[in-house]
Amino acid sequence: MVSDCNDDEVDAVLLAILQPGPAEDGAETKRPRAVLAAQCLAEEPNVSEDTATEVLQRFLALIDNNAGQGEIQSNLETAALEVWQSIWNETLRTCLLEAFCDSSETAATNVAPTVRKVVHSV
Image 1: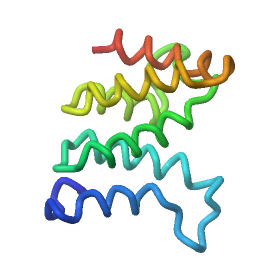
Image 2: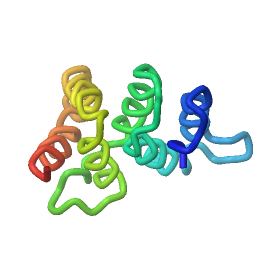
Image 3: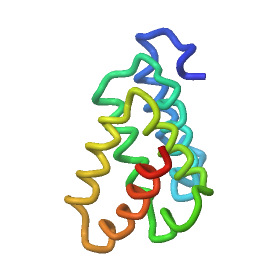
Image 4: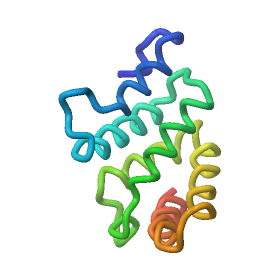
């Protein structure tokens, strides 16, 4: 999808996917939008490092205490694994580490199981 865009459009398209439209309820659509943007990123489009980082930071901000438990089953966990297996592995690794280190204790506790699950699933 995004990987089919012209190189000069990829950043804008990914950022548009992240941003809820004016008629949308952002609370309801931010998770599916962030997951879709991460899945698009995993397709390895020619996107800037800054845009990839923004996509991943917003994606990882959605991890809650239900993520990382048991088998990979949520769309968030599946998307994280897809990105982990892409050229954006190092960027994801950096964003995960930052999310873990810069978060409150609760948020860090939420991120840790997802990190473990993604790393051990490869």
